[in-house]
Image (cartoon, rainbow, N blue to C red):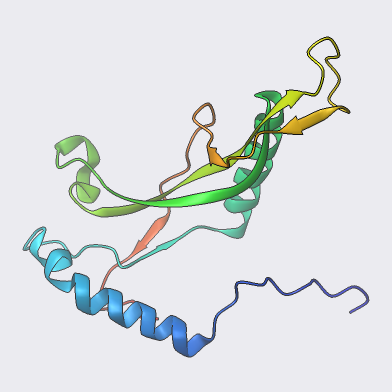
Length: 145
């Protein structure tokens, strides 16, 4: 491979990942099985690379249009409303993605050029961009890391 990609700095070992998953399943198992006697809750969420790449492209492009320098994605846990509208997902765990970034502002208010920008210090959730949800869930005990 000519230009191998740089390894991300936040990689963990497979063994540590297994321990984290085991800890989650052990600590959350009462909540996971107690939500509904006939339904098992998610212990994993899957998104395709293609959908993640589309989302990253969307937030970077739309972020610039909204005046943000997108710098990351925050992953939030959620629970679907317990109503008929959400069908088999009602009352179950989900994971949704929210872009984060810093607001871009002109260095000089008279010059409206993107070439001359400075960013605010604080990274925040970008409320003007849509979060992403609806990954495929893994149901215990069939899916363990």
